[in-house]
Image (cartoon, rainbow, N blue to C red; front, side, top):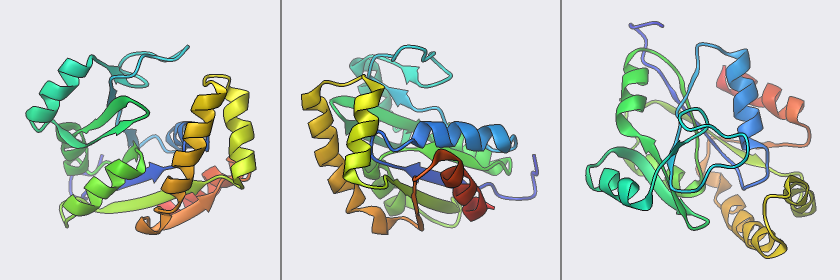
Length: 188
């Protein structure tokens, strides 16, 4: 950690199924000085997810209390569940000179843009699928959503992709290794 250097917020957004979590995991494995901000959520854990590692899982009541206490730097309702980023965690890491990766949705990015100032240097990257057909195929392969839910995610993905101009950079995830290299080059 370099206490004389201000850390940077690295925001990565993508429609559901574009590989955002895998990309962030690989970036963190290759750059041990970077830290992930673990989001808080009201959604139930998926198979293999652990509380505190993947998300902090909580009830809607607990989440709403934290919102009222101004605990979150950004928060959003996505697919019927709430997600949020700890304001204190991000501020502490940035003050220590650590780069913090936030994997958040477009709603959260809009909130960060409204709050952005010199005390929070930020680089933002939007990950695009190669096509909507490829995205649909990726969502179907996950086998975590019904056909109706996949349709809803694809509709929202189109809306999110329309907001990509809010980001500093756009990366098309044709191949996970290519996307990780490209994002790493943009960050460094």
